[in-house]
Length: 309
Image (cartoon, rainbow, N blue to C red; front, side, top):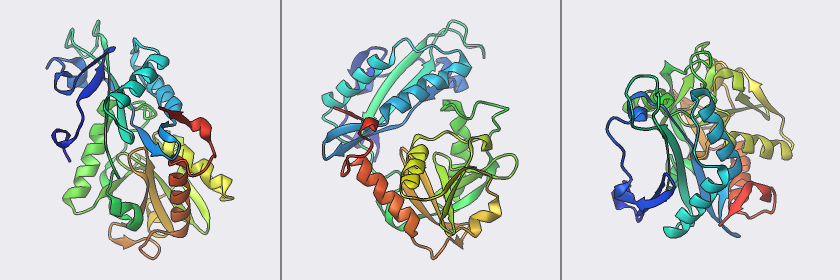
């Protein structure tokens, strides 16, 4: 569904609420030409305790941290961004939504150096269901290993959610879709498994859970960290600094993606090789159920992770 088909009408931009169609920038905006922006993706869930932002504080901390390599200063503090987001949701009567804070270098000069370009900040929110489809959550998806490699952290900060970095994700994802797959798996420059275009990845083998470590040029995913904690609370051994070879994907008992958009999505095939028995595996299902029980507040665990409207 495109934005024009959604019942959304307001965006917060540089300290003001503006009409959706009026949230515009100049065509010579620095961030438009050079990818000099940072962003977050946050879920608001319609929980049994009322609408709530999931791990908002961690997302906003990462948002500010992402600006540091680019010497970008956000002219609003975290409390102002929180208040703006809560009011934005209320103004649009959104109880379940995907929230996109973004900061980028604006309009002033067009050299590669941003010079005196101001930092522009906006927050949008809209309804967004299952990122890879409702069916994917239950039945899993088919993915391919992309021919495109992930950036090395020695080339660009891979732990920052930088807008320009996601051209790499676009290339991998579109390659997969052109070849009939729902999503891609991206390897790093050493040929080890890194992540998906917009997801972290987990592998299950003999009851142990593995996920690539931060040294593998991955994003330090907030949903990744959530699932690691949920798994350990349920007695699973989690190796969260793993180096996973491409070949290990084919012999995994289970594979799944995690992410704020993807949530917990099973992977049933990689390059047409069936994973496990080709269905959502028992560990994936248990962790997926634990995740949705948590975010929909069917449990009182980790209430500190929620910011209620």
